[in-house]
Amino acid sequence: MKEEEQIQVFKRQPYKTLRCFMDWPWQDLFMKVAGLLWNFLTVDKYYLLMRILSSNRNIMNGYNYQKIFGELFLRSPSHYRKYIIDKDCENGFWFRDLIYSNNTEIIKLVLRNVDYKDRQGFIICETRFQHSRKLIEEGKWFLLELFVSECRLSSEDKAILKTSFMRYLTRVYREGQIKWRSRKWERFFQLIDKANVNDGNKRIITRSKERKTINKRKKERKAERNIIKYLKTI
Image 1 (cartoon, rainbow, N blue to C red):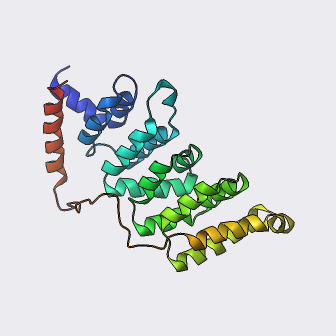
Image 2: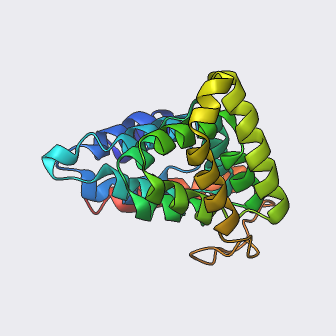
Image 3: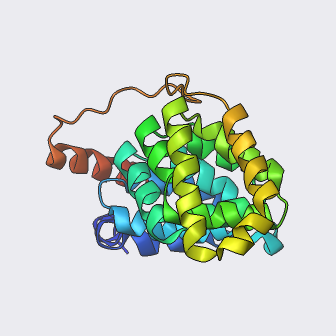
């Protein structure tokens, strides 16, 4: 296949291309190829990739998908990160996978690299209440503490979280069931009260402001040149 034909495949099928590079023996090239395809990969396909990576389903073969998840999340444009944060509030798949695999480092990485408003919406939502309730029932307090602490809510938002969570409980439990578990809810609220307060949304890494004024076609041409250059090395 000629270089121009390969470029067209990359442009037309960025998702399928990256799916191929997830599998052995190409995983080590995944991030390099991903860096060439941002101008062609849609946010919905990015979300699908992140769902696969969060599941870590290939770990039995000795390759850690969630490690790639973290690398891809850090390098992705901000609107890609926002999209999967919002999407997870709707269905709760990828973050649930991170939680139940006890991947504390990736959880920290995600929550420290999104805006405060996104973190706020991420924890104060129905999906996260479901996750929190399950963690409470399973006694996984260390994960709850980590999650709430890394969200770094303001005092006002902590109050909103507690009120909203209690309203959620009234929809899933009878009154007697809520009272029977009252010590668990109290412990959760104490955990919220002790959690870190918003510190101005410091991030793990310093990212330069994205240039929104750059012409899209100019970016695509640059990406094509990079693809050609990369193809010559493999």
